[in-house]
Image 1: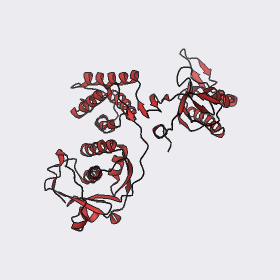
Image 2: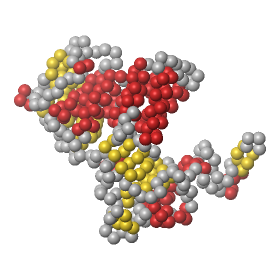
Image 3: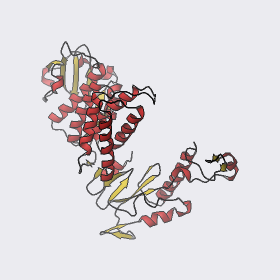
Length: 407
């Protein structure tokens, strides 16, 4: 799937992009004359007016606007203007250097510039926003409110927006640390931080404290509750990371797919088993491992975490790895980078701190227990001593009392 992250990560030298923003995206679609009697607005003084364009909020407006935007994309692709990314009213068009292009800039030649691509779809009469978007193609460009550097392969939050979100976090902490807040207060800060995880990947595991707390309101906008300490702790992490002026996310191409056959499984009766490239590792549980919030899904997630630590110990980096698990909860949590369960969320956070540092891209694939070669190991049926995986790592401090022995 083409994304701005993937496109920037593999951009060859000389690549440029330009963002176009459609003005009043949901309010500019003309209405068919036969439909106008049924599209009526009520004014402030109680008078009614026939609307000649789709008003904001009309259920069909978004779909119709999207169809027009899609038409522009289809025409551009037919005219060999691509690749193109579209997100609602934002259109991101890329251009790559060519040998005999009609347009020249900084020693590179291209097939088109901004005026040329607009000329090719001029008959659609799309109202482009005069201030939003980019005035020309550039190697540093905006899209969905973020800044993308195609030379350095960075994505970062513009300073003005960074300060805006920093103040929002600081205001929440100052207003509601040991004070009650409403569901609206939580929804506002949660939505802001979800948006920021495109740049701040480590923030994904700092969101569950907010979403879990939001469920306590049961949808009631008038209830006031005290935010838990864990929520304030996570917001202080956000405050710290948003205070860094030069923070950016490095975008790197995905490494080659590894040929390691990786399986992991867990059982509450014995422990965790891992198989990497035909060699096994086992982690036997202690008698007092189980506490509130720690169940089979947590153990299965620890199995994936242990795989990640073992890959680091083996010196694996810059690659794609497929990890087989028979637990859908674990697969979902690793895919999202977070979990509503506190203990699982910590495991996912530890895993991604290693994965990001090593440029390892994980792909979690479901395997039935009957077909999982790590299943018997997780039940204490260990493999041959000569096939033990020759790699080790130090257990996280919070797990030292969970396991009695590591094979």
